[in-house]
Length: 121
Image (cartoon, rainbow, N blue to C red; front, side, top):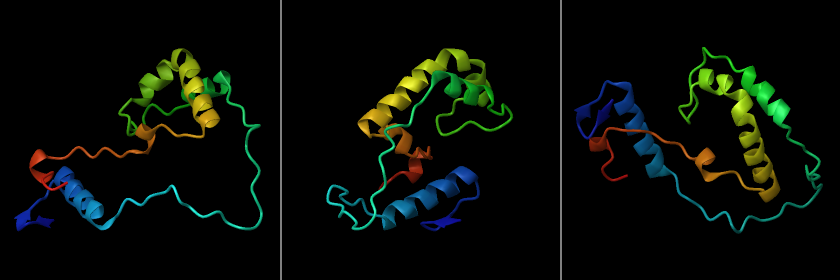
């Protein structure tokens, strides 16, 4: 993949070049003034309950041969610590539902790139 006349063949460099291109063509729009749609309204999901036992069961059923997610926490670690971390995760999920807010770190993509490719980002 060419970038400024330089050929890049490794995956990380190519990902950084693509990321730079995507950043250049997308804009960040103000989402504070979104119009309300007319018509049927969807009911609130206030009756949704999150239980520690169910979070723990999901963690215990993780496939340890799968790759880590964006948090870089290995599935083997999550599965092995399911009993210890499920109460904490349950509270985070409940608070997120209560506040109607998803933690911003869950919405961000971290593309670790070669510093020489980050100029102009």
